[in-house]
Each structure stands twice: as structure tokens, then as C-alpha cells.
Image (cartoon, rainbow, N blue to C red; front, side):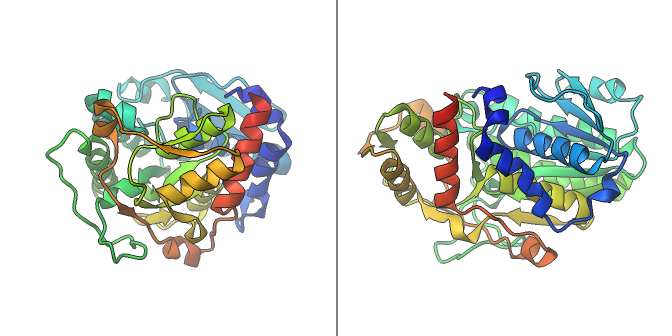
Length: 354
């Protein structure tokens, strides 16, 4: 992905500007400092761009502290926005000293290994990034008075839901086999949530947990090995869509700009200590149907293949991972982009910026 080309694409600019449609009082963010880990990831990219846009459009004078393994080339200091870029490892508690001269008002913790190849090859790193990274940033939050901590958690904390489940609510959980390396992601996200609750009780940290479903969008990375990302990458490259299972998996999906707007919404309106599912009921789809949608859009075929041993180790074992967003809907947020519209926008943007 070419970030500069992405930022200049009219459809992506529409995605970013759509944050103005959110029913929230953005003026409460005036002169605030917002820390974002994983700021160049799939969702972090859009989140950062939305906050920058809001700061300039409404003259919020935000300070954005961006933590990532890579430096964002597009975001720079501007008239109403101060941007501080730090290339840092959040698993090292030196991040607390690095930020000691800032008063931070909000922390978004998005940094994580997020796709199957990483889970398969680096299960230890997956655990430490999630658990130690979360602990260090919660510690940082505890040292900043009235700092709200927003954790980007995952649908994967739910495990294997019952086939009859039409959408898990926040208190409903299925089976998860913890005695396997693939549980590195699920279990470390579960523990990250527990750490949030522990810091809430023991250190009085204000925490909000966002359980995101499977997300996609034009800010996806070329090395992303999630099924939907591989389908999209193949599609824009003119290669047939490769399905490496029977495709019966039934999952919730969400477009990246909707995911980012939900995080901003929870920053402002989320209730301390609560977890919220982030999904779109119009974007629940079986994997085989998802493959067919992308194949049709790109005028290609769906072909079947067996996964490699490494791929098999990284794949989620869940066959039903549909979650209900009723709780956050009742608070005032709803997704705007359904699966067909989101895929169409993603493909058009990525084809244009290749």
C-alpha cells in the first residue's frame, strides 16, 4: 500500500471525512493529547487520519502521539495538529519514560500481530505484544490523571460459538482450546481484557474494550494473510480467488472506516469498564460467499486448494464467529458501509493506487 496515494484518493478521503457524520460532541476533544499504538495498521491508519482531519476541520488543536514499527509518511504537524512520531516497542516498559513529559488524555491500543501467518510463526511474540504491550500502556494510562484507555480486542475472545447463535452478545462465550499454539491470539486478547479490568479496580484507570470483528479495507497490508485480505489481494492482481476450506465459516465483517469511527465513538461515549462488540449485521457472510462476491467483482473464478501445514496452524478453528453490535447501537453508533459496498470501495481504491 502506498500511503501517500491512499491519502490522495477521493474515495479514501470520503471514508476519512465521514467521521463528521458521527453523532458526537467533538469539541470535548479540544487541546487533548491522544496516544495511538499500531497507528500504521489496517485500522490505526484510518483512525489516525480521521483524528487529524477532525483536528484541522474543527480546530481542535490535538496532539497525536503515534507509536508504530513504521513511520507514517503522510501525517505531519499542521495548523491545528501537533504530530509526534515514535518508533518504539510497546513490550518494553521504557515507553513509559519516553512519554513522561506528555499529559495523555486518551490511549488507543491497537498494536498486535493480527493475521494467521504471524500466529503460526510467532506465537510467543503474539502473546507478549498483546499482554506486555497492554500492561505497559495501562501503566502509562495510570500515570496520566483521567486518561481513558481504549483496548482494541477481538471477536476471537468468543471462541467457537454455538451453530444456533445468531450473534453473540458481550456476555456469551463459546469453547476455546487453550492447549494449542493457535490460542496465542485468543487467550492473549482475553488476558488483555482482564488486565484492563484489573487496572480499573486497582489503579482506577478508565477503560473501554472494543471487540472488533474481522475487518478489511484499503489500508490492508500486502503481507496480511487473513482470508479476506488474500481474496482482495488476489482479486486486484488478476489472480483467481483461492479458497482453502469448504467455506462454511460464518463470520462478521466490518469496513475499516466504520471500525475507526466506532473507536472514536467509544472514546467519547463508551462507559468505563464496559466491553462493546463492533460489527455490522448487514455484513455477516459465509466465507465461500465472500470469495464469490470478490471473484464476481474482479471477474475471476473461485478455485479450491489445500492449505499448507503452516497456514493450517495459523487459521482460526471457529466456524461461527458472528457477533451482535446491539449494545453499541443502543448507545448511538451504527456501521455505514455494508460488505458489498465496502469490498467495492476497497477494490477500486487498491486498483487505483497499485
